[in-house]
Image (cartoon, rainbow, N blue to C red; front, side, top):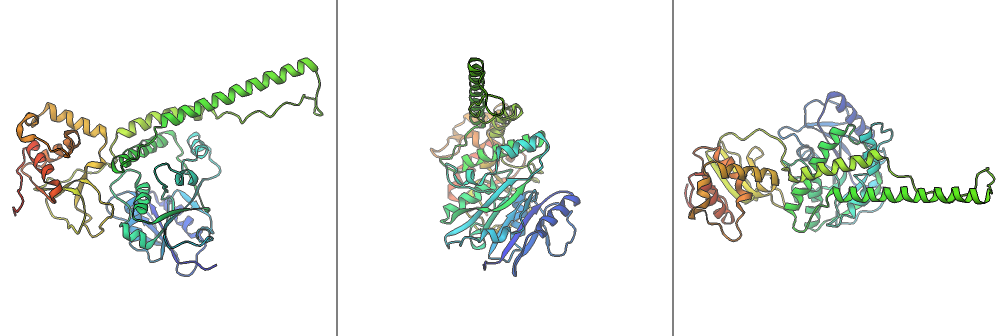
Length: 444
């Protein structure tokens, strides 16, 4: 069987020991002429290794940034993204192409199964819940999605989209899959292309991950009209009810079997009276308890921002206000910061990587409410009721603008300038609320 060349990209951040394990996982793959292995090192701990190209992913510490950095060095017709906590089966690359790939397919999603030997409660819970199920992801009610833990992407499609969105805590892989389909490319599954995944080993790690996932889903809901994430509370309630039904059925069967033995005393060949097979045993109570804990964590996560922690931007002399950013080349400049409503559907990778951009779509409801409360009780809150603050019909609400106003207040003397006609009214309102000078259209 012939197949196209594949560049395997694994984002990595961790210790030198973990780096050696990740490199070993890559080297276990069966390769053909033209294939290449790339480790995108996001922490600078991976040693030089024969057979693997180690690329230092400087800048933002995130899987999305490392994937993009690795893809920048890839030469294959297809790029396979694998997470560092996954162990691919040796024949993974051939398994992806066992079925011919049609030209309209932009990406193939492989299976992610739990690694054997989980010993901790958190790891056994993750394996039992099968959070990364290929079937469940492809059957998502909004539209099919995929995880980047095991995702093969046509290089041309990756370049059309500009890669993964950076500057996010979570959900960048779901967003990539949805943008891919919006661009007219198809996403298909390859269940026989399997990697084994190691779930979080401790409950605190699992809870942090769950809050991050929830923040990512809330971000998707702000970005994609019509998508509403199902709260984990509903899923947990269904599991509790299912467990109660199983326990009730087992008790009924047990009473029936006991009554039948007492009435007739007849026995089977084994010495015990034959009885119907009981239903499947209920889930461990610890799993149901974890369902409840994670459901509460998810409610917290829904309120959080989908922006990872980072150092604040240095004081800016000029704040540019945009709707979607970037939509064209943009080079970094000293003392310039961008306040944008949202990211574009297609990333322009020519935009300056060091330009500091804050996106309103990343901010959770908790950050917006907190910022609004600070505006109400501190100056320049007196301006909120003034006539200069009248907002247009389709303008963002004060709740949405409040974090941007606080950021602008930390840039004393900064001028505000809109980058596009759509953001002119927003720029004016930000300047009024923060007491900052506004550059009118045509100002230098």
